[in-house]
Image (cartoon, rainbow, N blue to C red; front, side, top):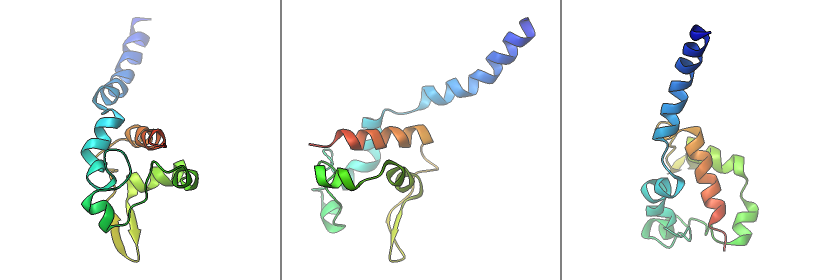
Length: 110
């Protein structure tokens, strides 16, 4: 019985460690996304205007967005006409953190 409990605890520790280091979505947004997309998601930043980034607070834009496509863009980046429009963050954030960003983007809807 003690061996089973130890094994269970040993297997759980890596998952707990990942959970403890996961950054909150608002913090991720501020650190990784807001410089282009804006704090409010309206993309009224210098880069946002230059790249013609869509306004994530718009109900019409939100209706067009698909969660799986946003997740893919966050993790793998966005390339258009052979040019990188947005870098991917798969090496810098976990899948769960990226999913939390998708939920955060949904919360920007006006």
